[in-house]
Length: 320
Image (cartoon, rainbow, N blue to C red; front, top):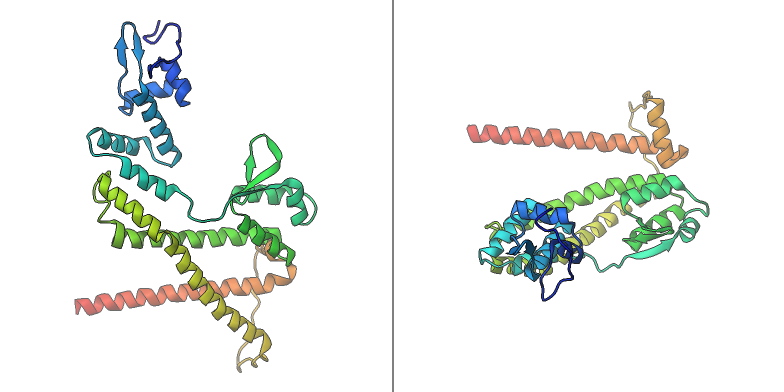
């Protein structure tokens, strides 16, 4: 018979048997014992042959569950809780966690039925496109509902619908979103590195940070949160105006004659590559897509080479 055996009684006055605590917290008995072994949960009070838990244990379990949901590991949670138990306070840290984990946009999620989705994208079911939209997070399945989906960003779905209506294939839209997402994640990472170096480093010197420092950092997050989006919006508007003007001029102005001696060459590409590009952009756009991709790669490699040369020259100047 285990040490927690006996008839499970309903909690009274904040007193719980382990089974009662598991029921109240949503954790399993095995999980609770595991937290005790790791030092995340204080030991229960021993009363006769039974272990008795109290409201502080329930509150601690709910804090652990909340931090786990926010992506924290058990090791980092243990550091936070140990700091709290040592009297350093945790309110500011939890406030900072909540601020960072909160929504970074005013947009509200929506819902869409399968029938509405099919109507907006061609009128007939496309299981492959649906699976890719779910994989990308554009749509989320709702448990128990096969005919309805959660839409985290209705704006993003609306953009996809407009592009599709304009003639862009769904496969090309998905590929573009994957590429765009990688570039935007790079921008977000750089912005965080920049603000951490110049703003947040002085608040996050301790692990975990002091309660007052964490509270000040949370206040700064609220103030700085819109800046990344505002900066990207402004720069995107500038770049779109610049490149849209160039494209318009290119297509409206008469083409310049090719310089003397210029020639075109045919290059053999694997059939699989041609097929993949054709599926992405359509048969008519294959030559332009390959030419643009090649030009972009040439420019990137040229820039890398110039950067490396500049670095070498700088190092030589420093040595000299």
